[in-house]
Amino acid sequence: MIMKKNMMACVLLALAGVLMPVGSSASDGFADESRNTVRILEGDNSDPSIVRYGDAYYLVHSSFVYTPGLVVYKSYDLVNWTYCSTALNHFAGDVWAPDIVVHNERFYIYFPTLSSHGKTSMVTWADSPEGPWSEPVDLNVGGIDPEHVVDGDGRRWLLMSSGDMYPLTADGCKISGKPVSVYKGWPIPEDWDIESFSMEGLNVKKVGDYYYMFAAEGGTAGPPTSHMVVEARSKSVFGPWENAPFNPLLRTQSRDERWWSKGHGSVVDTPDGRLFMIFHAYENGFQTLGRQTLLRELELKDGWLRLKDGDISLPSPAVKKVWGIGDFVWQTCRENDIRERFDIKPGKIVVKSKGKSPAEGSPLLARTSAHKYEIEACLTLKGDGASAGLVAYYDERFHFGYGFSRDGLLRYRRGQVSRAVSKCSEACRTGRLWLRMRSDHDVLSAWYSADGKTWHKFPWGFEVSGVHHNTVYGFLSLRPGLYAGGDGEVEVTDFKLIVTD
Image 1 (cartoon, rainbow, N blue to C red):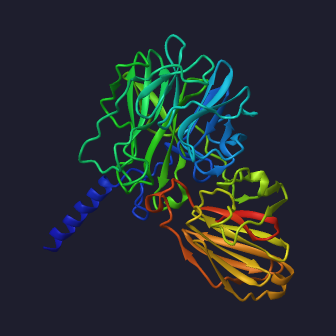
Image 2 (image 1 turned 60 degrees about the vertical axis):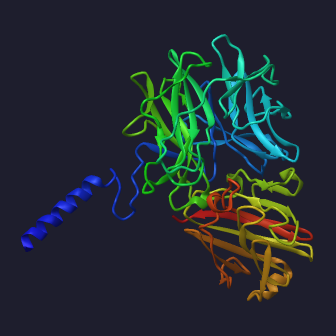
Image 3 (image 1 turned 90 degrees about the vertical axis):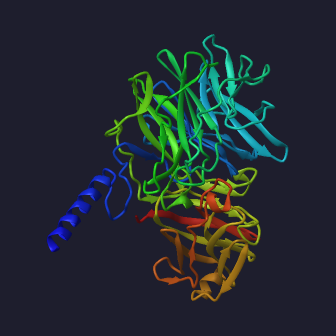
């Protein structure tokens, strides 16, 4: 009997080895996608759109309610990106999935927006990706996720998420006629766990004799297996479009994978003919970080574009552990123009106070993909009524943080402000305090100091792992930031974000 039990145990262990995803470990349970998947940029960068011009690549994302909006990034190797320009310096509403293209040596970004005037699609253009970008032009067409398409005769079209394609004028800045329906999507099996059908984010790429269509389906949130990229091909942009027999091209198959809700693919080629798909996904266990930008290599096989197995033919991105003021593309939430309240210089930030809490005045927001990090700064109050703090900010409804005024310590939580006595009462009265906030796997804690050397812990803590789109909606992420409240200004020096993963 003992021998039979031992034999059965060996069989079970062998089966476990067979069933374990390649590259995973029993300790984390996640499939190892590090060989074929590269994460680029920091934090929440969803709905990516990419274009190559010469030997340089340009990338934009949804900016939603953040200002400045439509940040353009530049890269020469697809993995290391730097700030290039911003196409929207003023708040233009809730800006969703854009499309960046080059046509006749001019750059265009097509984007949908929702504002007090309703939903519409717009375009902005520039003769250089560094800008300046034009004022947005209203195309007066609803729908979402506009995609610029050029047909075989060189005519320009705007393909919407509905699969309808609108003719554009030669300058690409006006709808010139009625739409043509060209694509209806790929039917998702009824028994799959998805959020909804939600066809969106269409992307068209010409490779050889075929146009290839890539469409996001399944819903951008919901179950981990919901979002996906499906593929179709045609020899004309007008169809008929043949869906790939192996659809979906890209999808999270199990909640045990590292990346959830993979979707919204945009395809780009390299000067030497390689093909890559850039897309977004949530990191398993860290949905608070938002939808991050990922990269997979493609190959042409039997007339279809497929995900390439094995090691990706790109270098690893540079890893940065300490970030200073000049390392971020700073943004605000629903502020008209970031320059109205925030004076950002390499060694110092001056913030004009607004509101009694982060519910009434946007913090200045950074981004990170770190599971564990600290932000630290010296905050000096300018004005008797000013207050300041460090926060983790989702939006006006959901934010958490630590601050001080001349009267003592402050806690920010969902529009509420609590108070406590400071052990550095003299430093508070003089209006200068060092603050440090730690996020450790979505558990927040903080410290304060009169000199940046001797630290005291705030008497409060938070657990914020539930603050993400699936639970509170908004398509946003929990971002570290600097808040200034009350009346006056706050001077920020010695700022740094330290990744401690």
